[in-house]
Length: 207
Image (cartoon, rainbow, N blue to C red; front, side, top):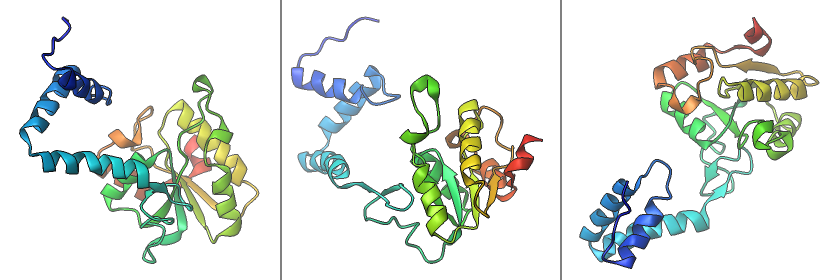
């Protein structure tokens, strides 16, 4: 593919920045930049300021580590949620995926990744100890392990299960309506919702 020639270095710089985003090629980047150029200066300022404000002001919930505007996120601070049931997920996108099913009324715990020695990610790099502390100090009765059904996800599930073994707590995992090797964010809402509702005891997931 030939290198695009730009008549303006300002245009080229803007295209280069958009092209750094995942899934955005240079053609799409150019189309987005040209679209913004057609907007009013005020609209472009609002667009840009939304991301500047996001980066400067966003925080992470001190209880579940989900993205939040406040110290405790809207889900954790909602008295209508079942705080005795905690769904453990890999990342923030998984919270959104499960919330979209409207089948889960508990709360979450975001690990911030999964154990992956190949990528240099170990248990200490994740929010596992804060989960154990949450179980120790809270009124948690059930932990749902809702990680991707990959080798790394299963390894993380088993590690957490072993860490929870000393506690009198129910540990379940999502039903295998999610195909082996799938990531939660790519599952359709109906399948994911049923997998949450039909969760099984973690020990039974080996059978």
